[in-house]
Image 1 (cartoon, rainbow, N blue to C red):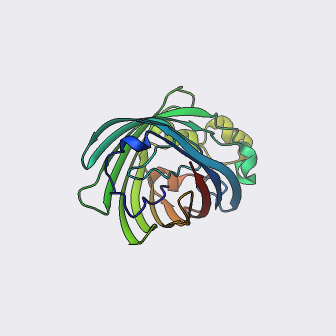
Image 2 (tube, one colour; image 1 turned 90 degrees about the vertical axis):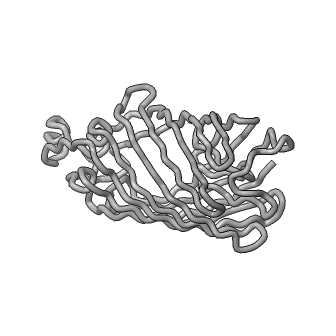
Length: 258
């Protein structure tokens, strides 16, 4: 998630010469399903933040930023192209996979290996307040494999000095290999877990909606509170691992900027 630009910043504008280096450190608290499709929930507290120098950024697990005029991609990223209302960037981000001890419903499924995912992200702001984002991701280490495609449409309202409401909605899809890793059941996993064999094909993964309120407390401090809803679709919804196709998450964060 991105923290709102200050009132004097122009959304989607170029980064000025006085902001070549900046950063933020903070914490994010999130309650969400134990895994995608789980019936139970988990809560975690995670360090988060970012460091930026020019067009290069390193962002933590929180995925939020205090950059004043654009967003920072999660992981190690670089802005490739900035043209008025259009921005193209690339990023490498760590994917910590999934461990079967995250839920009793995963007993016998084994772990999904951590990997690094490479992404190309395009953002277009046709008018102030609206943003269309599309991304293509692949497994850079070919451990889990497969690719993902995501698209999100967002609307921002700047309701006062340092105050922003953002509502977003989008769709996600994946290749057969990606969906097999996360939602499929191999014959070996079936024998250990008791789930029937399931081999998903490429298709839609989920639809998601979110609403976020962001605020700046002072020049150095900012935070947000957000709520998200997702609904598994297609092969992901049909998976025997999916105990509840509807997922809810609530998050809040506090960050100190420098």
